[in-house]
Length: 162
Image 1 (cartoon, rainbow, N blue to C red):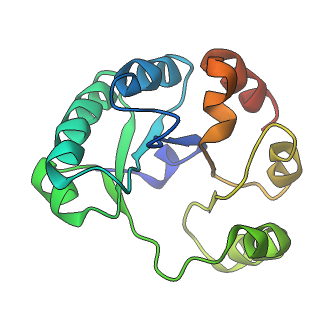
Image 2 (image 1 turned 30 degrees about the horizontal axis):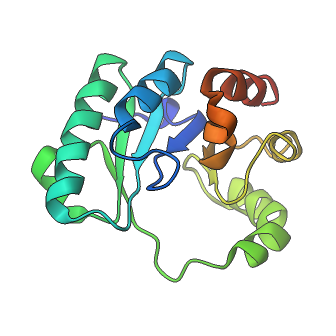
């Protein structure tokens, strides 16, 4: 069972372009070896069969590293393989809107909610430190991790800023 205390630090997502099926497991293992403890499978283009195969592999890998495995939007797969969590976003705001309002929303969420808060949307090496002053539990990342195939170096820089 997940504890709220387990939900902290960097939260890394897969991506159909940046982590293609052929290299996804190797890339995620590099992420896990760098200390990340929350992984989310996100691929809007994979068939249900392709997604389930990848999720089974990723969940096994996360188990080895004692990491939390979350699946994006695919309740049926999350249920069948007993994933640690499911991310469901309904009526998400646009990236531009999120960038404008996120500091205010984060502050309000911290004051009103008693659950771990995860900042999501456009977080990178240049802005993660600005968000860290809000005492956020998790920072959701995609491109900031995989840029230039320098996963370990990118994660080291990001970890140092929170």
